[in-house]
Length: 395
Image 1 (tube, one colour):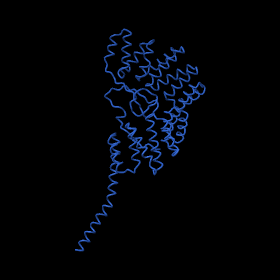
Image 2 (cartoon, one colour):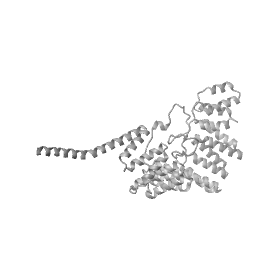
Image 3 (cartoon, rainbow, N blue to C red):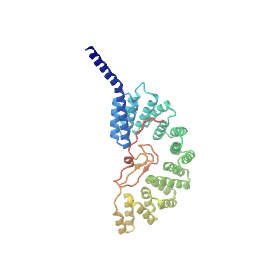
């Protein structure tokens, strides 16, 4: 009997030891499996399931602040800004939070505040992050964009310059472009203050740093207009509307108003004709054609016909032009096409833009507005490519 009891006790001890050895490893295995599911669903663009899985991971591992930072980043992308802010502030309240993760939480909070338009608070959070990680590339970039949005152009230019010294290759080029936009903003301020000489110097440097930016060339056109150099101003207007056709409905009327006041309409029309001959983007044709049609109706009509299939506005202008010239049959034929759905989106993040801006309010991208005039049955770029989730503070 004693031997039987000893055997049972040894068996129980063996089971307990085995459970003690296996159970923690089982939990680790399950946690790894959950994280693998998160990565897979993230790659598939299944945002709701990613959020659900992250919430489950956070319940099982409440001490892992990385999971909470990822969940907050995802919440911001889903538009749940208040919850993202709450998570970031909860993470920041931990006294034992490692420095790297504190930086990530501050950057995330800054981005949350920026997405709500609270630029001053966003800059404050990002400045705190920079004080903890002065060489963090992602933090510097977020700070530069926040300063741009706040209109603090000089500080933004300084932040981009620091960023430029820390990166290489394509990212260094992006830093230079960012600094160019900031200098263009400084030029606008200098011009408003009446310092045309300083404005011209700033905008010339901006054009060197960001030669393919419609925003920069618009600023240059305004500076040259104020400085009294019409040839340079007209060249800058033309560069601006050709570089970013989606901006044409803003840039072209401004250029026309200036040319009308200066008595330079004929010269501007020549430049418009040059753009119209090769223009394939509907927004550019729609902006220029009505003005050119006053003197060159056939060239305007040819350009409108070229884009009418992709633009309802172009088709309506073409019908109106044909009717004004008494070409009723041609007008009827132009009106019979299937209308295209207008859509202004950001080329960088794929989000819909309610109205044109040189800078996307969602992702901060400059000169990213695009109107492809696609039909409503086709999906957006964001829907096709899925969603990419990153930790807020990665360098």
